View 1 (cartoon, rainbow, N blue to C red):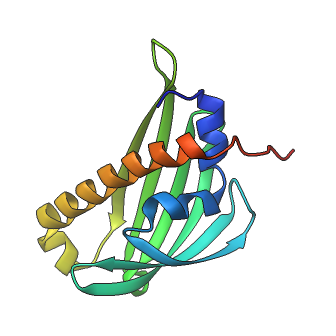
View 2: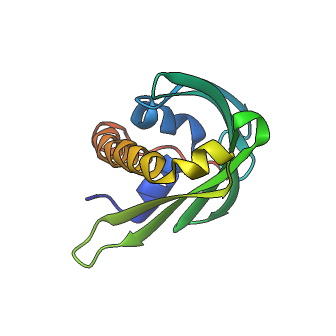
View 3: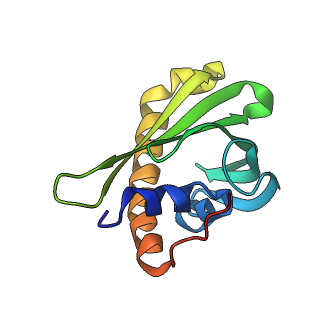
Length: 146
C-alpha cells in the first residue's frame, strides 16, 4: 500500500473501519467495547457456503505501529481463531500488510474440511486486502485519540 505505516495502523485500529473491506464475508456488524485498540469488539454474521453464523471478534493485542491481533469465537464457542495484521515499511515507501488467520481450536467438521475451508478463507482474505487498499485510497486519515 502506498501509505505510511502509521496511517494504515490508525485505520485498522478502529474496529468499525473493518466493515467496508470485509462485508463481502462479514455482515450485520454490531460494535461494543472500545472504539479502537485492545478491547474493541464486534459481533458479525459470517455468510459462507450457504450458511450463516454469529461470530464475536475482539482485539486482544496491539503493538503500534506494527501488529494488531484479533480473536474470534464462533460455532457456539467450538471455534477459536486469531486474525493477525502485521504491517511493515516497504523499501520504496508505503506499507506491506500481511493478514494471517489461524485456528486455535475448531469443530471436527471444519478440521476434516480444512483444505477447502483454508482455500475459501484465502480467497476471501485476498479480496478483503484489495478492498482495504480501496478504502485507504478514499478514506481521510483517521483522527488519533490519546
